[in-house]
Length: 96
Image 1: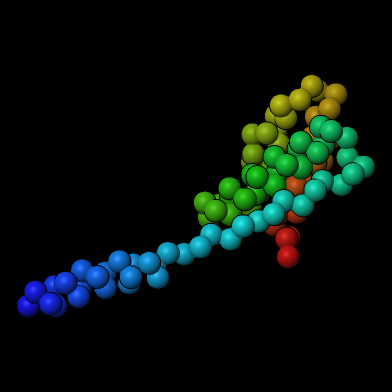
Image 2 (image 1 turned 120 degrees about the vertical axis):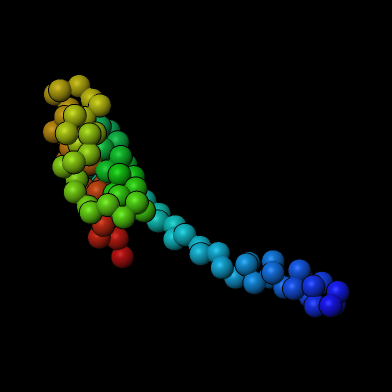
């Protein structure tokens, strides 16, 4: 009986080690070089937002993100930020 218990105690960690599921790593591509700095930041933020949506099982929708709706930049740079955000979001969704 003790041998079976010891065997089970040794086998349990080995069996659980095979249950871990590795998470894929998504390398963020660089933003287009022609983007101004504010659009490059938007690209990075959009890529991260899409990654979170997919990880959480949320249906992709770039327009529901607060940073897309209200960019954290001056008003005159908002459209560049949104353009970068959208491109980053789509870059994650269409990675391949």
